[in-house]
Length: 340
Image (cartoon, rainbow, N blue to C red; front, top):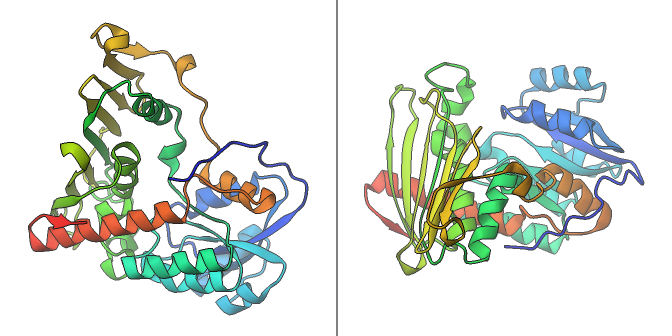
C-alpha cells in the first residue's frame, strides 16, 4: 500500500478542467456535487454512452455534451476525467484516457478482469497518470483508528476480520435496472457494494491466499443479491466479506480480532475496543480520540494532479480489488475455494 501524507490540499492556485464520463453509476450525481465544491475545478464537458442522458446532464451543468469520446481525449484543456460508466466499459475507456495523458478518477471496480486491470495499470504508469479510485471507507476516522491499532500491534497477531455491508436496493426497488444487468455491471451485490469489503480486508490483513464464495438470489433479478466471500490470509487469518441488496435496517459493521484484542465498529455507534489497554473490558472510544479523517479520494486526486503527489487509493489498490473480485466470482461459479 502506498503512503499518503496529507498536504494543504485544494489550494485553488489554478483552475482545472475535467470531464464527466457517463452518468450510468448511482454515485455520479454525488461526484458532480463534490467536484463543484472543489475550488478551481470545472466540469468542462460531458460524454455518455446514452446520448439522451448525456445531453440532459450537460444542460444541467451548463457545459457541452460531446458525442465523441475521442474528442474529449483530444481536448488539451481537459486535464482529467471522472468515470462513472458501466463497469464493462471501464477497460476501454480508462486505457484510452491513460494513453491520451488524461488523469483518471474512477468508480470501483477498476475493470472486470485482471488482464484488463493490468493493461490499465501499465498505461497509467507509462504515461505518468495521476490516478484515484473511490475507496471511501479508507478515509473514515473509525476505520483509520482500526488501522492504527493494527499497525501498533494493539490487537496482537490478527486472526479474523469481517466487513458486513448491505442495503435494501433490490428489495425496496430503488436501484436502477442496469445494476441487475451482468453485461454492464459484471455481477450483482458483490461487485458493487461488496467491493468495499474486498478492499478493506486486505488493508487490515494483508495479501489474501484463497477465497470461497456463496452467492444467492433472494429477489430473483438475475444476479446475486445476497453474498458472502470468505478469504484466508497469512498465519491462518480469515476475512469475511458479507453483502446484499435485500437487507433493511442493517448498518455497516466492521470487526477485527487478534490474539491480544478485538475492535468493533457499527455505523452510527461508537467504536468498541477490548484489549490489554482496556483491562480486558469492552469500552467505547470517544470520538475526540479518533484520528482525523483523510480527504476524500476525489480531493486526493485533484491534489495529486496539482501538487504531483500520490493518492491513498491508487492503481495498485485498484488492480488488487479486481483480482480479488474476479477470484470471488470464479469461486461462486465453481462452488469451491479458489487460490489467489
